[in-house]
Image (cartoon, rainbow, N blue to C red; front, side, top):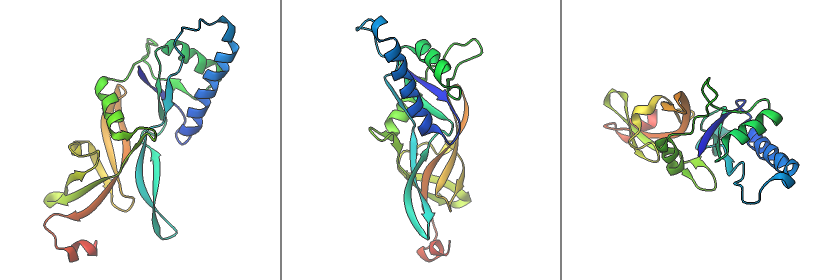
Length: 195
């Protein structure tokens, strides 16, 4: 099952590596006491990311950023054991649960969304392309945001990102994804260049 672990914003990749190291340390400590048929404590751990571009030294360069700052995904069938391992070895990373301490797995549609939009092996959501029509309504015409325009709360044209707000992980969260707005519908190419 997929779970969300919360960590320090800006340290998601370091937390991912620390989780893997903590699980490996626990495995080595308890190596002789475990049954060889037992499932591993951690199947995988990853930081979903999104692709965008940033201006550096006057040029646009591709970059990837965490999709959900301060969170990473852990896949395990032994969530209690993983949570115990994290409590023992990592103070800044914990699996999200309710006050009753029951851990909340991701919903099937959340898993499908993350899995469908991230490229396997890179866990990166590619940049979308959109147009703005009259009334400043955004229409995404290409990429993973097609059909999800309702999630877009704001767009930063200079940074080429869309700010999303959606229900995920049992709470309302904000996320950023790459969005390149190419033109305004109904405007001439000259008017679009003036932007």
